[in-house]
Length: 213
Length: 213
Image (tube, rainbow over all chains, first blue to last red; front, top):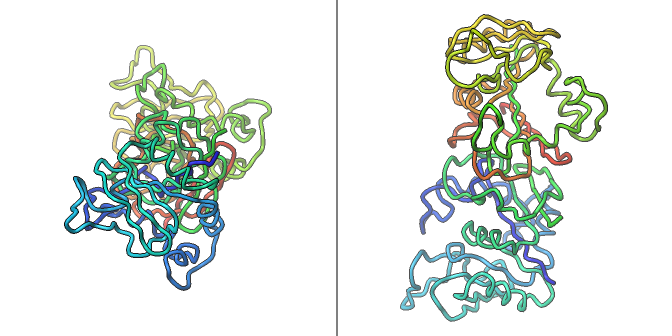
């Protein structure tokens, strides 16, 4: 069966977003420091339509992460638009611009129903109100034999981890402290049997890949 | 000048001890999981007077950690004996047995004065009541050109980190969750300019060495 593969950047003190997240600052105060390792990479810039960039030890990790993915799941906050019902008079299309970097179906967990959004470049946002298992089943069907990526944020990730539904986790450990914000792990059993399979040091980050023993 | 070198094992969720620490369970509930990587090592067993053990990627890290150290600093809890004044009728000599694995002077931070304790094998416990800077000055003198090790626990470590006195930090990151307990890092500026210099994956642990850029 296709795997659910989760990836996220986390600080040394366990935060995946800084404090005071808002529409203007979706990563919270200092949250961009979690991602500084990725922005210079050619492997990140190309799928985002940008020229140039470096190749380093993170490159094969990124390439593996992006390969064999047929669908993505994300939480409402990661899609964008803030809490509460959608503003259907002027619907917000998320943070991702007119041509999002996914190029496959993206299932957004939400409490508020909404028609699918078809974007340029093959990305289609589908809004799922029936919960995480339903979203996973839909994503698996859409992935058509490929794997499903769980993109975050922390709240969606904690739900899937708690349910034991994550087959693989790639933690990008940024050697910085945020001091406050949103934690990924909230109890001792959150790994639910995932164990460290590989650690890959790279400039500004250590990649920690967890799999089911 | 001789460096202050700090080493500690930390869980993926940022704890250096589990919850409910006590005299019977000084590492707290589950705290021994932080150290499972070290016990099988020949490089750990030998200084503790034990035969056998394995050699792996952790071995050179341990050897570097133990080399060129002329004195050690530790907190009262790590020495052992619980809070409050020393029981001078039946003085507790700490967790470390009659022949502790240090073989050099060890300066114990405490609020309660006590005569030095001379142990077998060259270890001498000196109790310092005048604070962390005084302890460091004494330890540097005793180290006689070598470096000073800061052995922990978390409270002592946080004080030295906060004061910007740590020159080098070796974090042994254990890929486990404790869920609760004592955190090493309590605010965003706790690294005080220490940056990741080297990451070394090894069985059951990832060694993260921080130095002053």
